Length: 215
Image (cartoon, rainbow, N blue to C red):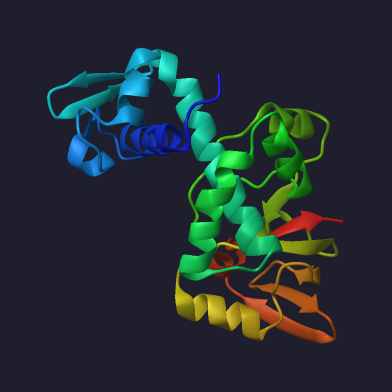
């Protein structure tokens, strides 16, 4: 059963609060709704959540859908920011709009298109889908950090996970941009790679923030 977009947003916030922040419930003020909110009542009728006073609890029945809402949102972020190159507030807004369209296996197709990314552009984990497990089992590991490549291997830059603006600017100035080919020449004492006709060296921490698709 497809639920409303507002109900999906509530479930997404519930998942983040309980699974990623370690809380056992979310406060109504955190969710930005009142106890009589239509979308919250929709989830209550489906037994996805339980409302107790000012706190809302995610029920076992609602966990699979909450997990999928987070997956769809973060896949949408990858698509909008990496493929369409829309960043910042505009990228976040478009991702929020687009995530509600990723139903009926569309999310699986997007995930395959992006080669099964494991994190969103902000470094948060993307819950894996069946397609990710199948790709892993078949040896198609999808997107990996540069540190997972061996010397001599080639990859296509998929995305950058650098949260620090200065690091991001440094990588972009090197030509480390999604879609560009990269050849890893050495892994010790630093990671030395070639993009185009230029060669660069980065430490392991920065190499972990460069994600590539193995050629």
